[in-house]
Length: 61
Image (cartoon, rainbow, N blue to C red; front, side, top):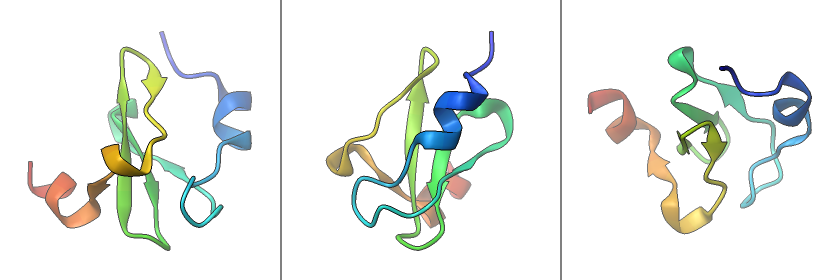
């Protein structure tokens, strides 16, 4: 099952309110402005600033 496209279109970064990009494999939502990735667990985006992973660490995991 995939994430709902309509949901993804309305989600914004909770820190800067910028647009989010769905990563390949639907494993996370990336904010280019903040350089962080919000993980997706069991098809649920975890949109908490404290749960965000720096983009460079996400790409290296």
